[in-house]
Image (cartoon, rainbow, N blue to C red; front, side):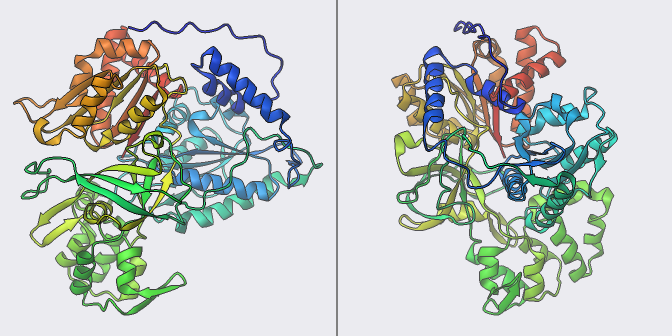
Length: 615
């Protein structure tokens, strides 16, 4: 067991000019840094302070409200949508001359909640009613007994979610209700946005900005100079709304044929290693980031929808100020592989179906969730006959959204490339083949083909700033992808910390993803420990959570020594089982009660030492 680092005595400090949230951020940044790193950081900050560029006059005046109050915008985001909307609102508020701060939920100082006067919360809901990982602590605090009375607070909540799940926008609803219970004043109704979030978020943001203007009534203060924390960087030329056409340079199957995927009888499991060129894009990523891909629906699926509804794919259809051939709408602009409650409701009306209407009743949430999870749009259209026009269909279907894939590489190793580990979703039904839009596009793409991509940064899932820290990586199945990038990056840096990987899949012979690479990393000393769980290779199923319990003493010792812990993969079951196993290990080997074990793990998360990338 490595000895825990002895903390340096904190130097006496003058009264800080930084606000409390900046002090919290500074504490997180410097946590675990050695003397050399701290001296480098102090020199970097001093250089910024002396830099003429850093001291350039601001282009716009600093503004303050007449009351000296400000707007606080707190966001909790899993895939980046809530973050983008919160940033958009903050930018609009600043442009309107308001004093505003934007804070990620896990960096929000909860002690300040009782003194807030104007608060907007933008937060997503994950899976079966769970908060995003960066908001767990804040949600628990507000829901718990330690939350203060908030009679002086005015607030509004924008919830994001996916109506395919029964607990649609549940976290936004919980916070909205709880803040009101604590005495805060709700300024206007909670927003609940589906995957096509702009239809709800746009008017919500406009309303939020209007209320903030009325509440704060900004006045222009004197012109001043601004010293930014870091040099301003130009926005990338390519992003979510302007993707880069990346060339596919490699597409190979990772696992042996003969391994059947669950629910896909008669089909081999197909896991792909994909390599895309980012040359000429100017795009950069760090280990832990994701690559966003704008998918296209399979042509055979589009044609099946047109044939079922007896619609002309070449007919022009106008919607939202845009006119396109119906086939193009269905190929590039509308969601066909994911079924959502609003479309079920629309089709129930078009098909005059009592069966579908019964499924939409409040007491049928479980049955409806089952339908949404195993049924695509085409299945619903074929099972329940209904008359649709092209215009009605385009208006009723949700917009096609990008898919995010954890990047399985480090640019320090692969340069202007991004590697992915992709499970191709393909299965047979009585009515024909079904596919996942993005995975099918990637699996069937030819080398040389260009695909629209962008980088989705994930600041919650980062390697330790101190390279001497150990890391524990838990990534069954395709959840191993980011850890390939982690190990590459640490090897390129010559990081002194140890790397421990726990990987699982059904079979050793057919499902050991990147087996040769992991074995080479072990031999080279770039991977220090590898524990495997192949669930179907013995009578009793063994998963990664069983390995965690089996090696609990070692795991707890690593954590006590300062290790960072990472989990990537399926959120619906694996992540919950792993979390439960971690709590059990901490309770047993730390001699803690269940409540104390939960507090220990929460503290790791708040320190940035327990991070999850689950989907």
